[in-house]
Image 1 (cartoon, helix red, strand yellow):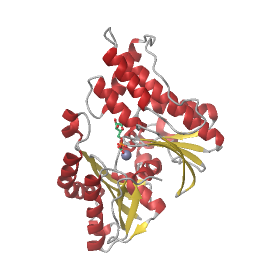
Image 2 (cartoon, protein in one colour):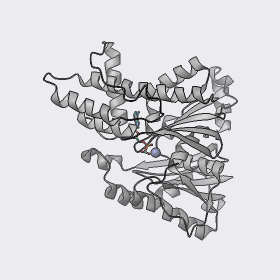
Image 3 (tube, protein in one colour):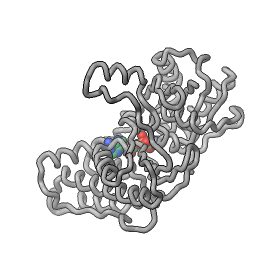
Image 4 (tube, helix red, strand yellow):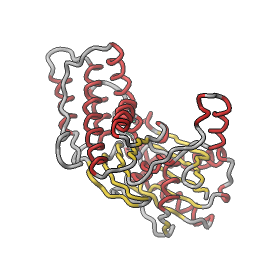
Amino acid sequence: MKILGLETTCDETSVGIVQDGKKVLSNVVSTSADLHKKYGGIVPEVAAREQVKLMVPVIDESLRLARQKICEVDAISVAYGPGLIGSLLVGVEAAKTLAVILDKPLIAVNHLVGHVYANWLTVDSSQLMLMSKKSSVNRELKTVNLPEFPLVALIVSGGHTDLILMREFGDFKLLGSTRDDATGEVFDKVARVLGLGYPGGPAVEHLARQFTVHGSQSTVKLPRPMINDESFDFSFSGLKTAVVNLVNRSSSIVNRKQVAHEFQNAIVDVLVKKTFRAAKKHQVKSIVAGGGVAANSELRRRMSEAGQKLGVDVFFPSKGLSVDNGAMIAAAAFFEKNFVDPLKLQADPGLHF
Ligand code: KG4
Ligand code: ZN
């Protein structure tokens, strides 16, 4: 089953075409991030206007790369929330129109659920065979390992931080969420304070890495909020304030690399500790991560290390599939099959679990 997935919840306009929830035939992502840089964060009006401009060209390009005609896809899917209402409306109305005109089924997808299913996306198996022919190191790469249930999912994005227990496809139990700021949001704010651009996550990661390279010991100490709290909730606003105070109120010039390094460590410490406590409590077979912050190399390294210790498989989508993309929406659509009436679907900016 070939599904076309539309993702327009925020500042990315993305369309992916996925076969049977796994094989990515194409995944085109266009972002308006550059336009928001000078404001240090997303301007919803600007993001929505760019969605309108990019929607049709991105659909066309995705079909071209997948060598598909629009009439050849079996269903249309769309992320209908959570997100910015102006941005969401563009994808939702485009998907409804396509479904009605082409007389194809329409599948509604929760954007957050899409981040989880990004972990089922694999490269084309014929590509894997090609790789294995080229290199003896890759010869083992014949079967693709997929997450097994029960699993714990950590969603860390610009708008959300959620820990979820998943016992089977479509069965999501929210274990905990952030009580204030989302992980990506804090990365973006800290980046602004440190004079870095938007989006902040990759910039903070880059700066933090420069500190590690020099091998110095960190003398800056930041809090790890709620790290030993019994609940699976998070709170990052105190950490954000601590960084702001450190940078703005410090009498001497702070080492920005050191602050970035310690801040990233603080976030990663909390995320790893809570995720693994949930994994142990629910005796899961796998842990999956998703959302833009899941592209962070330090988080990936530490989660994988902890997974090896506990004997639990840890999955991350490729970095490109961790951030917002249409392929993950098409994958989620395949596994969830939440068919909806195209004339009734409405964008839902506050959608959660
Ligand atoms: O999932 P996503 O693409 O969009 C939302 O659904 O919000 O996440 C975007 C967030 C931004 O806050 C961005 O700064 C953060 O993900 N991000 C990162 C990294 N790459 C993106 N945070 C930390 N390290 C990264 N490498
Ligand atoms: Zn997202």
